[in-house]
Length: 222
Image (cartoon, rainbow, N blue to C red; front, side):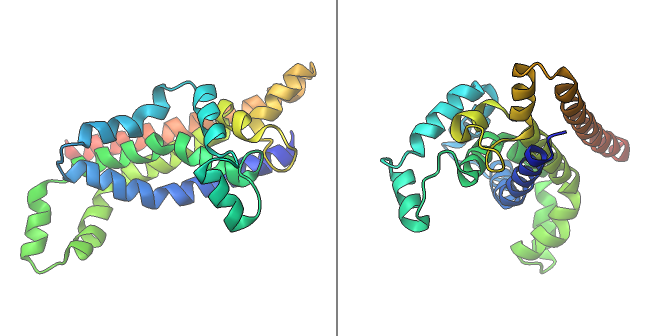
């Protein structure tokens, strides 16, 4: 096991989940409860990382993070370093790549909350914020857990985007998925097998959590 690469992967997955949760809640609820002219386009943009090849997405992000671009130059002025080949760069890339995994399960969960339930809460004297905290969140928590599980697992296994933006700097941008590739290139099949088995276990547990929560929701409705 490459413990340094595992540490980078876990840190990347944790920060990705932490930063995407507020954005996923806001965007998922907005897409589920409001109608506006550009909604299909917005949903398509959110889902785009699902169908775009990771190396293509990573290439465009690498170009966008360059020091001569607005994003890269602003980051360098604020923090004194570039984005490409840094942990900050792969974290921003991970936020983009994992956006659909964070937004879509939460959006689907909010779509199951009846609109008249919110209206009844408002008529009972609850403010919109109180309604969100006391009525909506308890109903959509399975979607939130699913979003966090999918985001965490996908971040651990992400390869193309991370490699394009961050390279393979040990202790900085070299994640477990990249370490597996390096072990295969070095003909260390035993090491690659151990790390691959760990990612397989995490993926299996994640799917189990997601389908378990979905099954509980169907059972409660029945």
